[in-house]
Image (cartoon, rainbow, N blue to C red; front, top):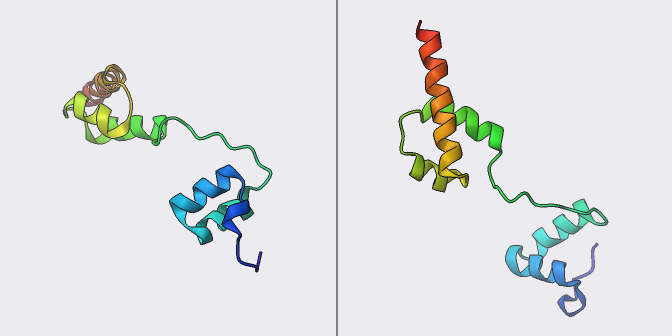
Length: 93
């Protein structure tokens, strides 16, 4: 699209994207995804990747802080840490 965008005529979704991202980025999103139904995951971070990082780097860190940082429950973080410690113990034997 080479013509300037008439903001008064935009669909509500594109109007909000234009407000959030600016006209250039809104047009890029429109061009890339027009006609596509998009579902945004509730979690920003991928569960499997977070799990791998927790098991590699955060076995002894505070679960409350990690739960807030990555957007998962404290119970889940504690479970992953417990599994990570068990794996580490088995490797040490």
